[in-house]
Length: 113
Length: 113
Image (cartoon, rainbow over all chains, first blue to last red; front, side):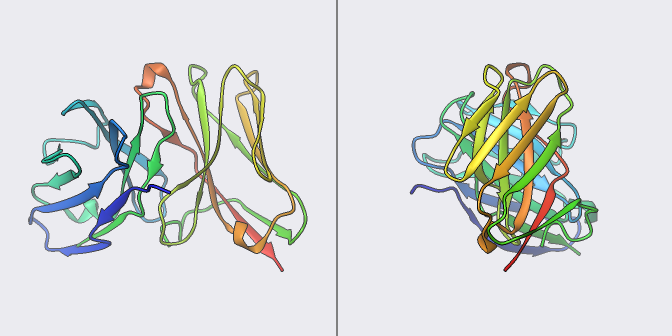
């Protein structure tokens, strides 16, 4: 069964450093998403991406965040200058169309020291 | 896991019993609802979904009920097994939300062998 994959599984970084989280969505899916889950809190939407541009973004997704689909398979989330409060699990998801189910990857645990 | 510290309601059931997990959603404009299961250290896993033109949908051992009048969603798991132990989240979205999922707070299901 096709699945969303994410790397790395755990990323530790120093405050102020840039990080790139990587995702490989399900191959025939066209819509891609990033969510995050801070320890002890709900899963929160960050951004959706379609046709090489951002479709929707939340208030969390400020200028420090960016997304990119650098090739035909990868989808990345970049945080330019990490803050302590960026520590969270980051989940990538994909769906075949706008109205279809979103399937989630296993997540990347980001720890900012 | 990601939900340590979250004050989750907990449902404890005996193996073989039926489980009912409830969720109150917030947006009356939402028209698509999904139940996800999250095991410790993993991403949300799709279980079952329902659209607003239905009030009941059945899967394998799971049933979702939707009451739009009171904005209530429930997940019924038949013959609960130890492998069903996890945190269960409902999520809602709609055409006006660009498929951005809004997650509920989650319920922890513990199955006693």
